[in-house]
Amino acid sequence: MNTNRAGSDRWISLLFILPSIIAIAIFVYGFISWTGYVSFSNWNTLTPDFSFAGLQNYAFLLQDYRFQSGMRNTLFFTIFFIFGVLFMGFMLATFIDSNIKQEWFFRNVFLFPMALSFVVTGVVWQWLLNPSTGVNILFAMLGFDSVPAWYTSTTIAFGFPVGSIEFGLPVAMLSVVIAAVWQMTGFSLAMYLAGLRAIPDEIKEAARMDGATEFQIYRKVIFPMLLPITVSIVIIMGHMSLKIFDLIYAMTGSGANFVTDVPGVYMFETTFRANFFANGAAIAMIMLALVAVIMVPYLISARKGES
Amino acid sequence: MVLKSPISKFLVYTILIVMSLFFLMPIYVMIITSLKPLDEVSLTQMWALPTSISFEAYGYAFERLAPNFMNTIYLVVPATILSAMLGSLNGYVLSKWKFKGSDWIFTAILFGMFIPYQSILIPLIQFLQGVGLYNTIPGLILVHVVYGIPITTLIFRNFYASIPGDLIEAARIDGAGFLSIYGKIIFPLSISGFVVVCIWQFTNIWNEFLFAVSITSTGSQPIMVALQNLSGSQIVQWNVQMAGALLAALPTLLVYIFVGKYFVRGLLAGSVKG
Image (cartoon, helix red, strand yellow):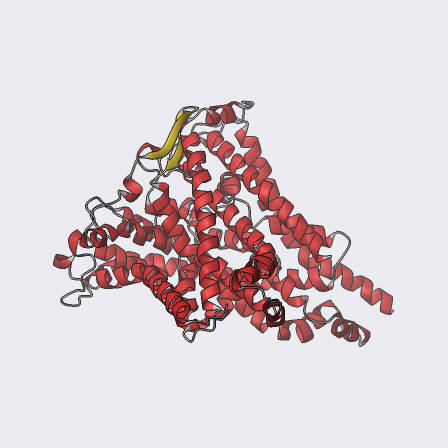
């Protein structure tokens, strides 16, 4: 009787998780397949047209000025954003962890932006980095003669022509990086703080007894122990920056000459404002592929590390 | 780090204070600008305190945003409760009733929280139009519950992993089944798990923009879409924009101020390796 009971419980447990499995199968994997199908179609008008277009939409994007600009911007945004978040988070976590009395205050000041919407962040930073007001007023008060143009700059620093665009650092993108780092530093701060607190004091004490300098302790003990956390932060922030949409949509839009455009914004506008559904689907599939390249190995390694 | 010399102590405090000013700067500008009367709002006086306090901007922003604020409330409350319940049951099954392949199914579910939602948006809208839920709050609730499954399942599964298997085994020997173990053991032990998940989902759904702007048009737009429209409008003064931004941010800010500890736990859980 007991085994019977266990058997029926097994069925009940499956019954409870089945709706979620079906929902994910349809809404994630089914819909992705459908988007993939659309990306190979001719549906670039308001009325659906599923006739086969081959790789035409992808070929269009590869030579498209706006898409190339967006990929360039995403690349530089990702590099500066990840570096900024790692640097700020690690520095602030180390300082906060140094036994200061106002720890509670500082931790919350650096963490609260995480609770805000990217839309709110975008609206506020749009004014702070507006070239004719905001931070530039403070700069002028400090006596600077020329002030930055922030997100209105159309300069591509260190640029050289690649494809149909000028490849180089789009200076306007740095304004978006500042806003994004302001918002997301709290994530790496919280991760690093948890990591630093998990390192037993005895290990650091032992290194000190052996005559290691403070700098050596960081290089030989703390950095290696924080490496897995750093990898997690890089992957989570990296996949976020590939998907970024709301912050740019609310703060700058595509910008003059697409200097602040990203694939997320391009996909949204070309699909839902201009009815190029197949082109939009192709952009989405490229975004998905980029995210999958970093997320799939991470998820598989996380699963293996568990068992 | 141990601060030995007074010089390093001074340096650390200086950097922390400068950074705090940088982090609080947007809040300072938001608050003072939103309290300025219209005739004091000028580009050159951005940093100056208002000479007199006016709630004019809040009045106007509230009038514009109140219906959307309510839309978000109608969205966020049911969506949060439903996705927490679903996540709890999934986490229970995936940690205490593992079956062949369940770990791989879990990984496949998890992937759903990292995809760019652009890659499901076109079929999602076709689907919602097909079932008559396009441009409705229930449609948005459905979307947030479904795409909330990965994160809520993850948090609960990791949470339940710390409940000893012996406890479950003992209950089964006493004749308790799937549901009574959940009701008598798992659920009562899950209160802090529910708090973490509810705060996380509340904050995320409140702040979400891409689904909101693609699935709704006038009438059922949530607050973030209305805020974006307000700030995109050329005729709206920026003290009104700042007041609007503060109103839209207030609920999640309050949640952070009062139960920030649980918010941070959700934050850390999102990095998969719990």
